[in-house]
Every structure is written in C-alpha cells, then in structure tokens.
Image 1 (cartoon, helix red, strand yellow):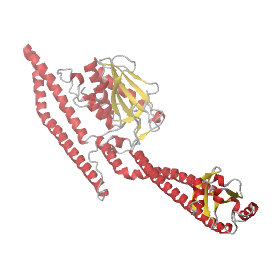
Image 2 (image 1 turned 180 degrees about the horizontal axis):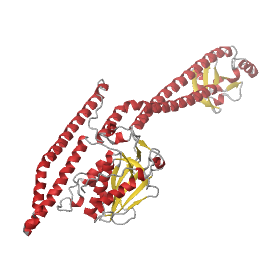
Image 3 (image 1 turned 180 degrees about the vertical axis):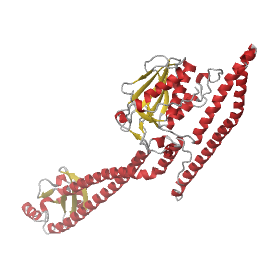
Image 4 (image 1 turned 120 degrees about the vertical axis):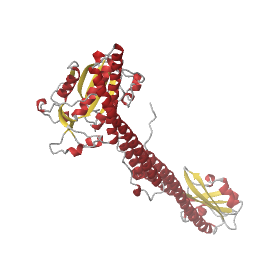
Length: 524
C-alpha cells in the first residue's frame, strides 16, 4: 500500500497551524508566567505589609512574662489574626490562634531568619495540602518573632482558570489558523492551478494556451515562472507546428508521384498475362508495397490534420447497433456476429458516423492481420462507478479476437504512432504501418471518447479492442455546424449528456440515417 501524501493546500494549512500552535503556546506561557508572578508578588507584598503592622502590636507586650491567654487575646485581635503565630524564648514557646498553623508547621529556614538572624523573612511552602506564604518578623527588644501564614487558594484557583482559558485559546487559535491557512492557500496556489489547467489544455491539443503574464508581472517570484512557462509552450507549439507541416508537406508531395505509380501499375496489371512468371512476382511485390505506401501517405495526411487542428466533427443521430452491423457487413460480408445488450437495438446517440465507422474498420483490419480475424463484436452499456457522483454511463463497442492477445505492458503503447508491437521490424502484405490504432484513438478522442484494449470478456485467448463513447444528444436542428468545427473533448463536452440511459434521444432505428461513409483503415 503506497504512502498517502497530503496535498499542497493541506500541507500549507498544517504548516500555518503548527506555526500558530507554537506562537500560541509561547504567548500563553508568557501570559501565564507574568500573571502568576504578578499575583504572587502582590500577595507577598500585601502579606509583608500586614505582618509588619501586626508585629508592632505584638511588640507592645512582653511575650516572655505575659500570660499565654493574654498573648492569645492579642493575636486574636490582630488583622487576619486567624493565621498569626508568636514564638519567643528562642523558639521554646509559641502561641497560635489557629491549630492548623503552628510553629511546628513552619519551615526551619523561615523560623531561623527572624529568630536567629533578626531579619524579616518570607517564603512559599506547602502547608496542610495547599500552597501558603509564610512571613516572619523579629519582635523589637525581645527574643521573639511574629509569624503570619497566608493561604494562596484563591490565587491557585485563579491560575487554574487562566490555564484553562489559555489552553482553550491555543486550541481555538490553532484550529482557526488551520482553516484560515487552507482558505487563504487557494490564493497562493492559484498560479500553480492555472499552470496545471494550461498544461492540461496543452495535453489535449490546445497548443495556443497561455497564462496572462500581465497579471503576475508585479510579482518577482511568479513573473519568471509564468514567462518561462509561456516561452516553453511557444517553443513546443513551434516545434509541433514545424513537424506537422513537414509531415503534411511531405505527404502532399508524395501523392503526385504515387498517383503516377498507381497509374503505371494499373497499366502493367492490365498486361499481366503477357509477362513472364518472375515479372509477375515482381509486379505483385510492387503492388503490395505501393498500396502500403499509399495507405501510409493517406494516414500521414490525416494524422497531420489532427496535429494541425484542421479536423471537423460532424455529429449525426446514429442508430448505433444497426450502424455497427452495416459497417461490419460492408467490410466482411456479414461474417462477424454483432451482439448487443438487450434494449440497445433502438439506441440512438449523437456521434460522427464516419469516424466511428473508421474506428471499427481499423479494429477489424487489425484483427484480420494479427489474430486471424474478429470472432464477434459487442455493443454494451457501461454504467459508471457508483462511488463517482460525476460519472456518466457510456456505450462500449468491443471487437474481440482469438489471437495471441496484447501483453499488459503494451496495451497503451499499441495506440502510439508507428507502433506495431512484436511485428515492428516485419514487412509484407499482411503487416501495417502502425497508424491505424493511432488514428482510431484520435477519432475517439475527437468525440470525447477513448479507445483501449483488454482481455476477452469470456476469459478466452485473445484481445478485446474497445471504443468507448459518451451518450450524447444533439441539441436540435439549430445546432450550427460551426460549433462543431475544430472540436476537441472540451467542445464536445458542451453537448448534452442525457439521462435514462441517461438517456439518449430515443427514436426508432428506422428513422435514423444509416448511410455509411466508412473509409478503409490501417492496422497496428
């Protein structure tokens, strides 16, 4: 199973989200640290001021000689006295007004500073399961000290709320940043999308496709990309145009001498009986090669018209199954059975009758020369993948043979120009020039269809050459011919794809024009 890779927009969104997450965490930590320190500093300052004030009150009595009840009364009357502790005689005696906090719970370090060093001290420590602030102040002129413990529960709760709020802010900001990054990335990758669409148009034969340079001329990063892409397309178009003109010019120049050769051969053929045996053999070989050469020139001319975009699509209402039968009958004397799915006998679609007939002729000729002829021809309705909401049904015409078949690694290459598979170096009357299947592919593409080869449907030995066409319906009598000239798959897709058999303009086969102008065709 191949590794699933994220798309460019998704990667941009993820990158923006990660940057936002890092920044949010950094800001949140900073905010939390500052807030925590500010709250604690304010509480420590407040506790220190109160402890100093209360120490001055405690200093008004002699802790060593006073009755403990008197000390307790003084401590109880102090501000926030519930957490006050008095320690005297070097820590031997102590008094607190709250049993929760006594001198025994105070850290040793906090006790020593006011009692021994005679300096005020403050520190945070854990007392009775919570964080508290302890403040110790020496009592003037006495071997005593006053301590005050301030719980920090309210600050702890406040900090917990701040943490929760900041965590929520991090999550929300990261999610919003990802959404914003995904939305905004479409503007960033729009030039790449346009380049992709332009490349797709070029692949479909629209060599004059260009990207508007003025739109990106102000961008120092994108302007060179657009300029180089347009220059590349210009160079490609120029090269293809030169090659197409060369093939067309050569083909035209060869037609005149070929005409002369064919006329001369006809004269020789008329006097064949007067020739010796060796001359007859030479004449047969010459006729074979000249016929093959003539077919090559005609096919090259047609290929050059495709390359130059000088082709014309002429759509007709075609009763498909009768048209296929008529084509096969004219080609083979009705020796090849035509099998159609039930319900397709009256199927009428819009297609170019001549080009469809040429495809079938080329497929049958290919079967004759490489597989001892076609065994049968099938006409089937191909339903789209249920998981593809945009899929439309198509009609498939398959020519099956009982030959050696086509290896899987050659099934695309057989439709390339001058590709004759394993017969690439062979010569003879039964060997083609390798343009028939290439022309079939061009004829199908012009009608927004495709050709392909696969194994026979019954699993037997041989191959099945298929032409697949969309179910198109002509818009009506006002559908102007000029809309069909120089047609491409894009232009033919403007025709209406119909519904129940998604449907076709259902007319009876008897009303369809069945005239065929099926020219001969080359093979592989």
